[in-house]
Length: 329
Image (cartoon, rainbow, N blue to C red; front, top):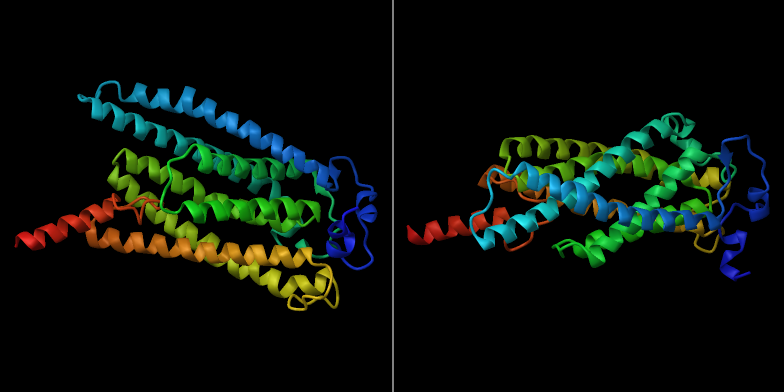
């Protein structure tokens, strides 16, 4: 056995892998095992196929069907329309997934005690039997982020926040994998459900922007701001992170301290570090969102969240126009 796989580094003092694996559960429940992560890889491959099928054979053809009465008149127009519909299909695929994932995740987690009392994420850890349905939810979520990483690296157009998104997805994959192995899935489910809520609106907003439905886009963007603040700047830091920093140590192990780096186990400390890094990314993206909100009021244009720093973004084009007008004056 590799030295870093020793339960000493992963589980509370006096608990071994055998203690967790051999714990009996009632039907419909299970305990995690590292071998189960192959299910995440398989669902990731399945979701990559899902993307190709839905984008190529459903969303793009549907977009062409709905616009058949207004075909572009030039070759450049045809190319621009093709590019737009491809991006819209990408957004529609994600929005559909996030909607299904959020609804199913909320339903599953709302039946669990830790949804109402977050300290239940840590009490009696790691002896938390996992409902089979939540196990599948976890595997599919991990697979989806594998598919997102594959898309960013090989399929999607490179955008201004390429590295931030890549770091975010790798952090999420590390959290899903590590939390599954050490059975900290309770806090993982809370994070996944709360994060999906705003992602639905972001991708719907992008579709509205591509279709230039300005009024609907403005309403959608306002909803994005509200849900983002509620889930990622209020619920995540003041419920989840607060509980991680202050509730978890004593419930993980009576004498456990985050800053005592020589103390075992180390894996919970790694989880805490990743969750804190995720909070930093949330603050960065919140800055972008509020910058867009400010520019919207100032320039009258709602820009794409992921194109805010691009030279060809709508806001930057409006700024350029204003500068040209000042020069003419």
